[in-house]
Length: 471
Ligand code: NAD
Image: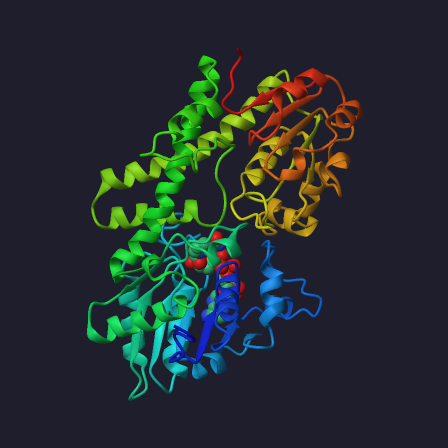
């Protein structure tokens, strides 16, 4: 079983983002006999992947070690997209597929412009047959559109097999997830050539993943499974968050309820942590994508069902923000609120759709002063997010938002501390020292249920946690 997949001597990945970068770096790491080139149009991003000091464009525990082991050996990062395509035997398409911001279906439909542009480039540049793999998360039957585009523009003698190979890694644990995935899913057409392409890709993964975890299914099942998996994960969070509101009103404790529910082997204990709401670039986008698909298929009741997961998430963020204001005597005007954490979850610097953005905007709207600290998010990223990528004048944001260098600095002189991201380091802060430095009464709002509530109350804090009512 040595050197499996060597018929694919050269793999190219279009898109050097959160998915393409780690995924294909791990393939290079695990398959020294395969050359892997990751290409992107974004010069700054590629420069960062090639940075001599390994200041990579994304933060993922363990990623630097993987890249250090194989960059320049069989892993290359480049902006030469056409050259990469021309040389490849297999091409991963790992470009962004955001929710449409304008036009028909805006706010729901996936923007497939980047997929189409990349697909057209593949057809135009290829002078030999290739396997083209959808790595991006896409609406069901996108592979069909890609095939039509490829076939309509192919040079004579070039055949394209299309596979769907959605990525299930979670940011923050990407390398761990890629080293030992629960499963790898490969969808193909059930033709001889489709099955053979599927086998070639399966052989690459089989260099380090047990065969029984590599699943082959039909193309459309594979595409839909990715949307379904994210919808069901997000649904668990919205369900537990919906229950957190009931806990607050009854005196039940959501951690205890989740513990009790999770012991049921039919349900399991993962993804039952109540919080201020889910974020990240995928959950909301993929559910909206599913909702749009259902609407297009004239399944309004099904669309409504999944849409409720997103609505619940919005409600949770609003409910938490309102709770902060209510608890602080119904006004936060002129008060200083420290927001600890800005990334959408711990162990990542990614802030896309982070709940923290909504919270800070709510606090700003109530004319509070906000000081933010996150160990992995830079001041410029925070400002970009809060100015909505430059649509709101920076001066108006800077008037009431500061970014601090440490958690203690963010909390100094504040009236309240809000935990927005579950970074481990927040658990071990010197909370007595922070309390001493704050205005009194000093409030803590734990939006992630990570702090020791009893210990904080003992220090003197007024503590509000999601899913815990008065006893
Ligand atoms: P990203 O925005 O970080 O990366 C996409 C990259 O593609 C960008 O750097 C962009 O410059 C590049 N690109 C776009 N069009 C290009 C073209 N024509 N030629 C070359 N480069 C091009 O996005 P991401 O987070 O890596 O997500 C990529 C896909 O993977 C999305 O469909 C997403 O839904 C899916 N996905 C994401 C995650 C996640 O955790 N982020 C997990 C699973 C699946």
